Length: 226
Ligand SMILES: [Zn+2]
Image (cartoon, rainbow, N blue to C red; front, side):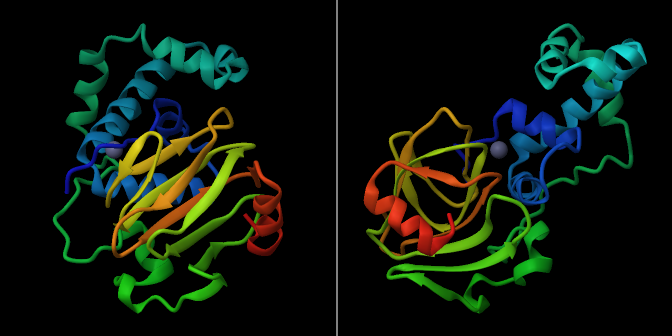
C-alpha cells in the first residue's frame, strides 16, 4: 500500500495526547494501523512528549495551549527523545502488519472485517452509509459513494478526517487512494469527487457540522445530517 496523504502534525499530537474526540481518534488510529510513516511519527511524539514532561514544570504544562507545546517540541533533541521510545517494549503503537482484510484493525469491532459484508443504508441517491458514533455535533460514519458522485463544495467548522478504504476520491489537493487520509481544519473548502470506476468507500469523521457553500448543498445537508 503506497500512502501519499498523511496526518497533520497537530492532529497526530492531539491523538498522542489523548485530546481527540472518539470518532477522530478512531480515524487516526485506523490510518496509523496502515501507515508506517505516521506510526513512526506518533511513536516519536510519544517519546518527545515524555521528554517534554520531564523538562517542564507542572504549572507550566497546565497553562500551555497545544500550540505552545508543539512549539516546544522543536527545542527537544530528537535523538534523546526517540531513543527511549524505540527501546520501550510496550509502546501503544504496534507495527503495521500485512493484512488480507481491507478494514483497518481499529474499525473491525464496529464494522467487521469485510467491506463487502457491510449492511449499507441509503442516504440519498448514490450515497450509502452506516453511522459508527452518533454522539456529539459532528458525524462518524462509513460512507459509500457511487462513481461520479461528489460531496458538494463545503467548508468546515472544525476538523474533518476522511480515510479512504476502497476506490478513490479527488479534490484540488489530488487523488486519495486506500490508506490515504484527508486531514482538514476550518480554513479549507473543497469538493470530494468519487473518481474511480468503483466509486469509493471512506470513513468520514467531523467534530462539527459541515458548512455547505451552495443553497442546494444546504438543502442536502438537512437530509444527510452532514
Ligand atoms: Zn500516514
